[in-house]
Image: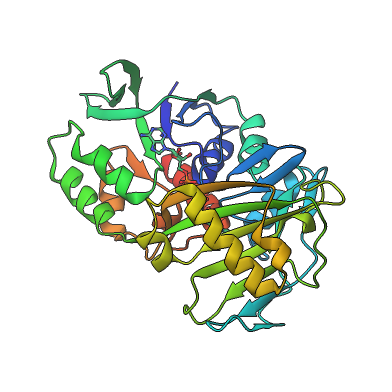
Length: 339
Ligand SMILES: Cc1cc2nc3c(=O)[nH]c(=O)nc-3n(C[C@H](O)[C@H](O)[C@H](O)COP(=O)(O)OP(=O)(O)OC[C@H]3O[C@@H](n4cnc5c(N)ncnc54)[C@H](O)[C@@H]3O)c2cc1C
């Protein structure tokens, strides 16, 4: 039986495993974290579920919309309230939104990968960081950073963000020009960083909108949203705000203490929503996403060339769009190539 190793259990890796569920391929997925779904991440605390990476999946009419529905409508949440805008002066206005549904699940966006994997026979090895890969006569071997080997595979699919994939390729034992050209192409993909601040309050916060997006890139905040608009995410009588700091601010303050990051986020939330109670959340959480959003797609030629040797890549940086549905599509396409 042919075998495939997938590195990364994010949207792309999960979609690839799902696409190959009916093939006779033996699939093993290696994921460095405890959970699945990568940057489409959910945490739980005190009865709240909150999506602190990607906020939702908005697949339009494409194949990913059908796939999401196929995963079962139980627990699927469509966010009904609109997205409004704000500018550099903090002026909030009704605005930019589309009719396309925005989805998550009652227990969070990680359900996407969890449900995809649940429909496969893939072996999922969490808390397993792949450190190196090596070409053999017949396929590929993977190893942990300490040298422990994970066996041999006919094909490998790498789905970490481009800079991390470039690091893996830099250390790979594969004496072939295709390794270096793919490494260079992956290293050339630039990323925006985002610091996410999570602010919880013991009172409700009624507004007409679900989210506010900054439209002129002239504010320290890029996005602010109310998790209470997602069924199952916030108990009645409470509010939980997700504040994503803008890429410039996030880069400059990436290593600042979490308490400073949340204090700035709370000040901006109070200002934008004109509500001083927001200065004082009763609990907070933060996450820095160094490689949050790729700015462009990787050059496709080195990707195709490496594929011919059984070394494949997928992810939002391969699709060229920093969206969950694009990562899913990329994973599905990689699986089709591998098949
Ligand atoms: C703050 C933020 C907000 C966003 N908002 C939205 C939004 O609202 N809607 C939207 O559609 N998109 C949004 N995005 C983008 C979306 O999250 C990504 O496009 C998508 O999740 C990328 O999926 P992926 O599978 O390509 O990569 P990832 O999700 O990054 O998955 C890669 C996986 O590889 C694992 N990994 C890395 N290195 C190794 C290794 N050496 N060994 C084993 N495992 C490894 C990682 O742990 C990770 O699980 C947002 C992103 C961020 C950060």
